[in-house]
Length: 259
Ligand SMILES: C=C(O[C@@H]1C=C(C(=O)O)C=C[C@H]1O)C(=O)O
Image (cartoon, rainbow, N blue to C red; front, side):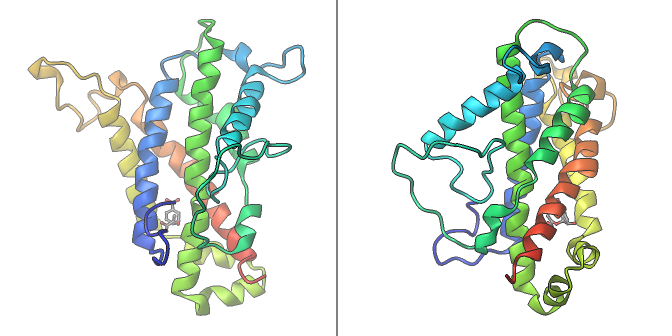
């Protein structure tokens, strides 16, 4: 988390929301990239070692990322945290703006299941072109972008708590998940998020050519079928999974906020 997270700076809700808006770009682009390849189902079925190529790739890639110094920040959460190697290079510390329990908050198992079971079939074409190694590298990029956005919910929760501890403390003490969920939910903001990601998919996913008549058709559904990822998939992704999981992160974080 960069915005508002500098040393001595106070986190603000608008700075954190700006960061979430920036993460949308990464998610939309990662999905557009993955959509270049068809489903490629063999990349996900168990191979000789027991696990799939996708699982193998993510495990190994995370080990390299960890050696390079990744996974130090609360929003960078590995899918396979067991036995990750330590950084081999000096890492710059990040400002500790969250409660220490933030490191225990992780919804990556739910993200993994959602991505492979629900999301992939929605935005990849049926088929198998044999490019499995490239495919799982693209999956890794999608998983990382989704996980990062969703775990930024820790910062959202911290800011909301700091802004009104008198509202959040009673349900935290009472371990009242539903009351916390209601307090931290802003339906009007969620509607805007859904509309914006759909629009981003429409704009980022169009074919850009130099002929006059094929540009600027972003408004309206006329060009949706030509988009690299169906813009409606993005609003559905956010509606059904990204925002609910972000809110799960917020609730989990808040429940431990006063420990
Ligand atoms: C992240 C926030 O908390 C909730 C989750 C949202 C999201 O995931 O985009 C949006 C609004 C809130 O219901 C927020 O308030 O910005």
